[in-house]
Amino acid sequence: MKHFISRRVLLVLLAIALIASPLMAQGQKEDESSVTTLRFLQWWATEGRVEESLEGLIAEFEAENPEYEVELVSLPFGETKTQIVTNHAAGTIADVVGLNPPWTREFYDLGILEPLDDYMANDPNFNKSDYFGASMAPINGKTYLAPYNTLSFFLYYNVDMFEAAGLDAPESWDDIIMAAKKLTDINKNKYGFSLSMSESAAGNGSILSLYPLLYAANGRTLVDGRYSVQTDEMVAAMNLLRTMSENGSIMPGTTTKTEPMVYEEFSLGNIGMMISNDGHVATLAQSAPDLNYGIMPIPTIDGSGKAELRHHGWDMGMPAKGKNKDGAWKFISFLHQKDNMERAGLEMMKNPSMYGIDAPEGASEKIVEVKGYFEEYAMVEELMEMPSASACWTELTKAGMQIVDGSKTVDEALAECQKAWDRILGQ
Image 1 (cartoon, helix red, strand yellow):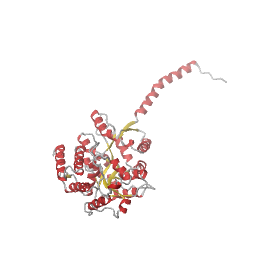
Image 2 (cartoon, helix red, strand yellow):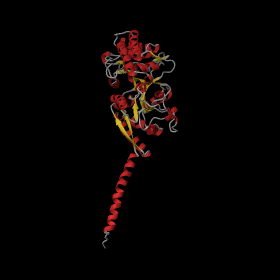
Image 3 (cartoon, one colour):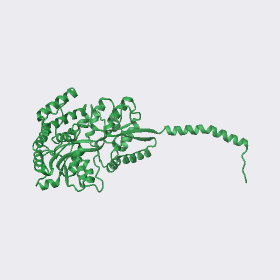
Image 4 (cartoon, rainbow, N blue to C red):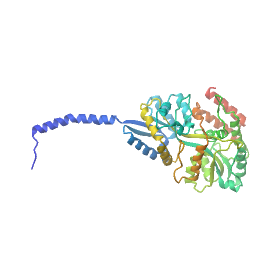
């Protein structure tokens, strides 16, 4: 049986459809406009397994907070800082940014960063004392970073080389000097020590080697309100390098070597000791699974007291010009919840900047050991508070180069560096 619609009814239905159509379109636009896009600018996703982990966490955040979507803006590390500064000047800044601690003071001076204290204090899910405090050192009384992942610098040593030489792990700087000399066999291309002290690229040899030694000696560069390299602890660190260089126990090429080159030499079993960050524990497990090595905090100068660790890490911040600050903090807070920090640490193969997170099930003995050091030892990060930090650490690297290559004495190199720091910092 066929059903017919009268012409009058058809016209009525058509009119209703014409009226409803723009209303439906308007409703769709309103639904779309109710979703706020948060832009997260960082370099993290360019490294290893990080992007997949971030995308998974973002999907969960969006599911819990349907009023937001997160756009992951990923740049190489070397471009991220420049892009943040450029975007700030243009007023097109992201809502959340990944931060390298030594950028902090420069960004503060440029007015780029939003203080986070009120957000942290008013968030029942965020307790500052739960997180490693090195990245939250205040600048003029305000906190600008939320710590996420942590790296610290340790002394790596080749256990097989030490045992063959009848040596125990060093307990003082004299032990390091003695062991480095005894482990060196030039005919076999074996050297007791290696480090990166090159002015090329970022000129960051001082960050990789000198600052870790300084903090192991409980020293600082900020002393009584003035930045100084002419302290007893810095002189001791430079003398340590000078002595090993003069007795031939540092592998040649130190002043041109990059950090990956030093790591590669250690992984091949050609170096007895190196100073490097704990991130190499995971990479050594993959690239040199049979290498028998130990990792330990760098000892204090004479072996007494307790060393401190140089902290470095991935942190998060909010731009002062950001237009969606409440949403930005909601996203930061979400990533910083303990279960998400724990998950990210496992998936990214990084150490979360949070107390009380156990090593993942099946983790290597060394991963467990490093996590124990994080809980036990104080971590220090002065560069985040230092104006013009990159220019200053480059000058300190130059001083380290001059000492290692013998072109200047320790006193000469540090005096020249101090003049440069005073000029750069206007002190």
